Amino acid sequence: MTIDRRTLIGSAIGIGMAGMTSAAASAQDWPPAVPADRSPNRPAWPPRETFRIWPGRAPGSPETLPVDGSTMEGPADGRQLWVRGVAHPTLSVYRPEKPDGRAVLCMPGGGYKFLSVQNEGIHVAAAFNPHGITVFVLTYRLPGEGWANRADVPLQDAQRAMRVIRSRAAQWNIDPAKLGCIGFSAGGHLAASLTVGFDDKVYSPVDDADTQSARPAYSGLIYPVIDLSIGPNGDSTKSLVGPDATPEQYARYEASKRVTGDTPPMFIVQALDDPIVNPQNAINMMEAARAHEVPVEAHFFEHGGHGFGIKGLSEDMPAAHWPLFFRLWSAKHS
Image 1 (spheres, rainbow, N blue to C red):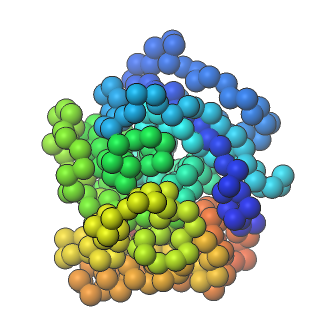
Image 2 (image 1 turned 45 degrees about the horizontal axis):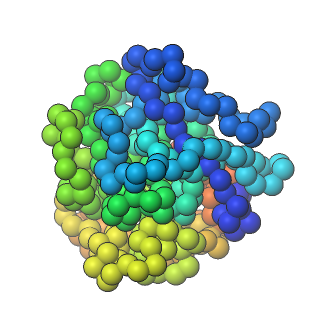
C-alpha cells in the first residue's frame, strides 16, 4: 500500500536524535530518551551505531535548538516513524554481513518538514544490506527550524556526511570510491542538490574530514523534487527556501539546470501518477543528464503514486521492483 502523504504531511511530528559516537558512547548518550509514543509497532530507532556528524553545534545553530520528539504517523494499517526536531544531524550505520565495498548515503523525504526514516531509511538498509551494500541513513536538519541560511542547511549536512564517511571508510570496510547517495522525494531533491552541488562552499571546514570529496560516485533519485519552480511539489519548495526567497536562491536549487559533464551518474525512479511531486521533475533531470552526456538510467512507471519507498507497493506492481534495478545499476557504476 502506498503511503499517502497528502493525509499525513500536515500533522507530522518527529524525533530528534540523541548524539553519540559510534565507537564509544558514554552512558548518558545511550539510550535516547523514550518518546511519548510507545506504539508496539514502533521500529528500533536510532540504531546503536549512530553518531553526530558535526563536532559541537552544526553551522548556523540558533540559540535554542529544535526540540526532539517522535510519533508514528499514518493510517492504522500503515503507520510509519517520522522524525522532526533534528538538533544534531546524525548518521545511522547499517552494516551488511559481507560488505562488498559499496555504500550509500540515504536521505529520507518528508517535504523538508519531517524525515520518513522508516519507509525511506530503515527499509532501504534492509533491502540493500543482504547484497553487501553498507547504508548510512542521514537525519539532516530541517530548514524551517530556526537555522541561519535555511536553504543551505540540508546540503551542509549531506556534504559533511559524505566527507565523514570517506574519512572513516576503513572502519566500515567500504571503498571511498564506491560511495554513492540515494534520496526520496525532498530527500531526492537533497540528493540531486548534492549531485550537482557537491563542491558548493556552504560551510567552513571544521576538521580533517573536510579535506575529503563530497562527490557521490553515483546518485539514486527516487520520486525526486528536482526544480523548485515546478508545481506542485508538496511542501518542499516553501519549506526549503522560505516565503521570501530570492530568484538567485531558486536558481541555485534548480538541480536540472546545474548539471555539467562532471555530474555523477544518475538513477531515476518516478511514478507517472504521483499526486505530490510533478513527474516533470524527473523528466527534466533525465534530459539534462542526456544533454551533458552524463550516464543516466530512468524508470517511469504507470502506477505507484508517491512515497512508496521499499515496501509501499504490492509485488505485482512493476514499480515495487526498482530496488533490484538500482542494486544492479549501482554495481556497474562502482
